[in-house]
Amino acid sequence: MATTIEKAEQRVKDLEEKLKQAKALKQKAEARVRAADAKQKRADDTRRKVLVGAYLLQQMSADPSIHASVLKGLQGFLTRPDERALFGLEPNASTPPAAGNETAHAG
Image (cartoon, rainbow, N blue to C red; front, side):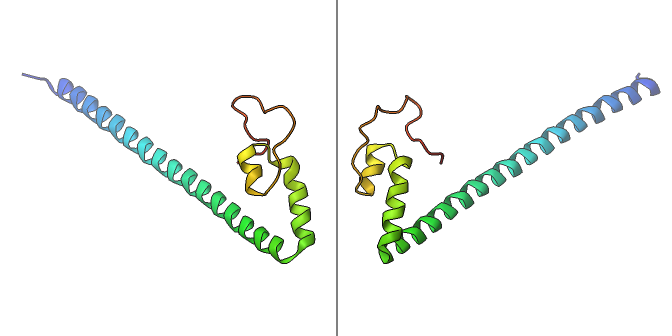
């Protein structure tokens, strides 16, 4: 027959195991929240880029000087031939970028 001390020790072990499980659940929940926040930040960033791009395209079509200015800026910004072709720019004559770094811009 288990003594009172043995019962108490078993109860402590059981509670410690429950605490360990609760902490693991808390960590999982916190990780889900962090992942959801990161996903929302990426979505917001993408949405900002789309809206700014739409605005610039509208401005470029309305004002030839803005069109010329943006294209001039894109000359040095875009390095990939497929990206340059989207704006009617000739492929760069310079050497291709290093492997794993296909564009000079972030994003």
